[in-house]
Image (cartoon, rainbow, N blue to C red):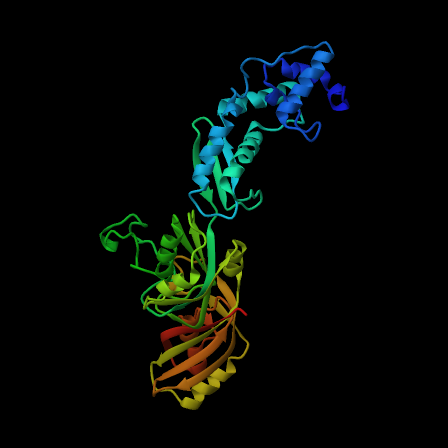
Length: 406
């Protein structure tokens, strides 16, 4: 008799008397012995018991699994049919097992103090996958599967969980009337009402939708999400090389889409343009959202009275590596914590355009409120350009001209 049986033979006899089939008996001791399936392990245990004068025949019907493993071919065919309907580089099988069987299994583990068992769910996943593999013609992936086929073994019903497609790139925002992402209606919170003309949105489109709706259709997906490296105000443009972003498509039934075609179709928009599209990984979302690059802006500023050209240039030059105390602006205090944040102006260049109008090109630390730096926001930003100039100013237009993330 092999050692791994001899050491636990009394416990194995007690478990066998529960009325288990060979497979379920072997699964109770799955971590003992190697290089065999659970049903083979169960037969070896039963033969050893008989040899030791402890004959416990296999029952005609297992009290635990209800002979669910007799349906492996049925389950595998159902899984293969569903998986073959979608594109993926790999797959993995999961299952919903009968809750009653899981409860009985747990009771047996606890009643006999078992430690070397394997769950019926684990075995079903493995065995269904083995039978399905030749019908699917793509490899199994355990760590990061693109397609998980979950079968309910009570009804042979299969549901697919498809990992998202992630596409990174850069965008230019060419309209001062659209937000970066979908903005739910403040009144109905997306349900639809007279305020939003039953669209559920504050604005009829966004940078996200200009590319997301096209990618969603190409991928035959469920929903799209947009992750930008920061965002600009609705009334701001984003020019230059553009702002980095990651577009996420959930539950994509197609994955290998033509990104050149996606770019061509998205760039038919007059509101936004998209460049440098490429597939990426989920980790790029966190990298993009957590990045804090400096930003370069160009603003057109209107003063309340005439300004001296040299004075404007001198004040601009004085703001080199200058720290600001910026309290949360009035315009966003309804949705942001009321805090005083330390921010920095790295440099400013000025050009006077008229008696009371000038442009500023400036590089700032990430998170700097540029409009409030110019105006002072009634003392909530110190120092400010208006304070230094001695004339109250306001930003008329703001353009992001560089996200310095390289």
